[in-house]
Image 1 (cartoon, rainbow, N blue to C red):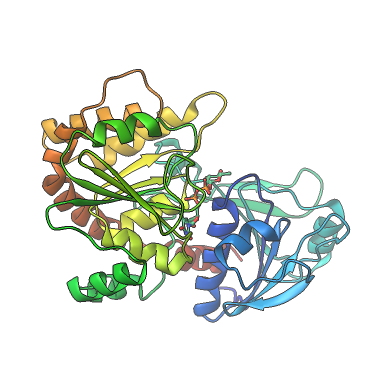
Image 2: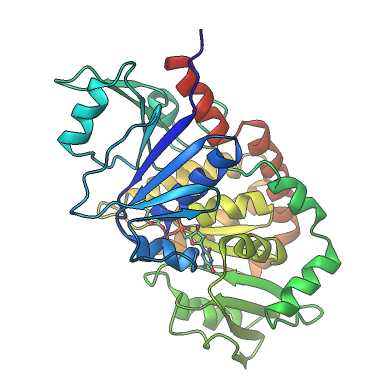
Length: 367
Ligand code: TRH
């Protein structure tokens, strides 16, 4: 018999940036919308506050988006009491919390939600058990991914319907609220990347055409104008916009002809946006991001004709730090083909299943 699961504790230790907290917030919100009673424990509330500015970082506990948000401070011992305990990205629970879990009857289902990767070994490791060396507890790995043999990507149940309903009028209205006035004939590009990206070179090559209006959220790079300001050089107009609420960030990705995204969550959202994207992966000490990039492009570029696949690969390699010469006009020339591919990719992903729903089903099975 499948186990009933009603309560979920999600634990998140922020390593860096916004993605760790962002993914956990999104998971918590989706699980809450599926009827689960969710508590999200985050050690660094200021990161999450950047995404959800209503958060009061001084509070130990507060309500947020249908779930309970708790501050996992150095002085609080988290007390998991839920049917399902999710540790995001391999975060470690203190011994006292594990002892408490081991004493529960039945013990909670314990999941380690891993990082996103398109590498093949993920399919073999997805759902594997990892028994605790001393306590009667078993942790299971749950891997996000891009194929049916992985956990898929997080997706709100109404996301694709909202995306489809976002027509040309809605786009113009949204952009004008941002103070953006897209000029006819200019490609609209969004830029979100790490400071390590060759941003100055990108801007320089964009100046030679084709015409581009590149929108840059606040805080991404000092090379872009401040929010509300714009500057034009050659074929490139750069415009600063505010850092957006995550739901507006989705609309922003839907609105642009090409999205530069980074890390894990913005890259996932760009795939649901079904628009061409260029992904800068989170840089790792051993340059493991390059292996991850190749694995992703092998899947994403699968049905592209060799010319387009090569242009995308070449430009992505350059954007991720490989010593190759980029071909910006060449890439822009195949944008319509990349757009068609992005739509098919989005449909494929949607057919592969959704992460939060799959995670709950798996937890019920093994519970
Ligand atoms: O912030 P990131 O670089 O996070 C990364 C990755 O998650 C990586 O896997 C992790 O190991 C590393 O941090 C430590 O990039 P990511 O994942 O895209 O998260 C950014 C979030 O910010 C995402 O949810 C989109 C959101 N966002 C907005 O809501 N508004 C905005 O204006 C922008 C630019 C981003």
